[in-house]
Image 1 (tube, rainbow, N blue to C red):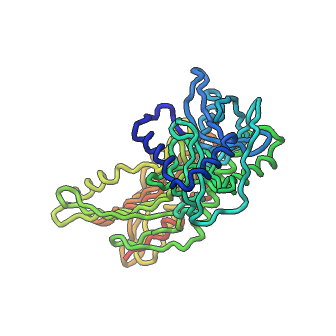
Image 2: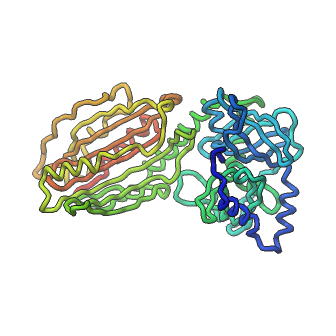
Image 3: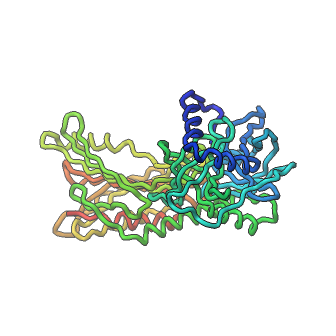
Length: 464
């Protein structure tokens, strides 16, 4: 989506022109014919700010039925969903014809929306492909980049990209701002995907067309040909999505990796990718080894609110002989004071965090943590704002247990009150100059899902 405040630099314009000129000359006529054949089914989607009656955002869309249904990305129209009193939606055809749009149904997980033209209905629509392209097959993205007019960008179909909870086609072509929601067609003119995002350098991503087919079927099944009430629709989609994610995670084989004196969780599922790093502070008295793992995508709800994130990270800190215990813990606190939730949300979207703090212990030899750290329920009403930590537990065996100070924080979604963001941090405090920090964030999960993940997470860490 293109915001009206985007700067239209000469460089961006040049990139767009190069994209137009990239196919070799032998294909120029066939691409030109494709554009000529299907241009009348393409539209610019406009977010109109009511007070000023001016454009506040732009995207692309395409007609998918003879009765005027238009498909685009959810993020193109999301502000009209979040603030219907402030925004209208309209379209403009390639020939400059304008009209209003009615928002009918959305799929926030797959970033799709279905709208209907009001008044005059376009005479041409695109068909949705029933067959998946072959890897390496040339497909063509259509859209409205940088508000410069409709553009055709050829590229290559490279299958479903890995490393995500959400299916996205890897497309080697340049999708620029403003092309979001436009169709990607095969040489027969049938839609195989929908423009959604780019990583630059000819790496872009498309929503597979089968997601649009499913949304269209859902709309016809649930509606009487009118607009659906969107909040219950989005709520159901978010709940189903978090359940799908948590089921995949809990059923996976959690492989552990060494970090300092501990064995910590690695890549649980392919959708979660882990990275590592090590560093020393300036006076070389505190060494840190870090391991961070995160799902690569989130569910976009609005400019200020995203959800569906799973991330966890571990830090092993060790002080040198020159560092005193008190200075180690002072540096330790400084290093760990910068934790924050992985997803974005505003005060309009979520409540304030409520936190439960306590000391927990874990046997060094069994690999099973005391589950009292996992029993901090997600029930917001039972979590205090700033409860005092309990006293450190005592050892029950020959080897002293690992003792940690644990914080378990939750905030509730105002529009979806059975969904929560969960923020967990555990800092070991049983050694003078060695410590492990464990942290995870879950965004948009139910009480049951978050509790199951927490118990699994704290019980998996093992100690040498």
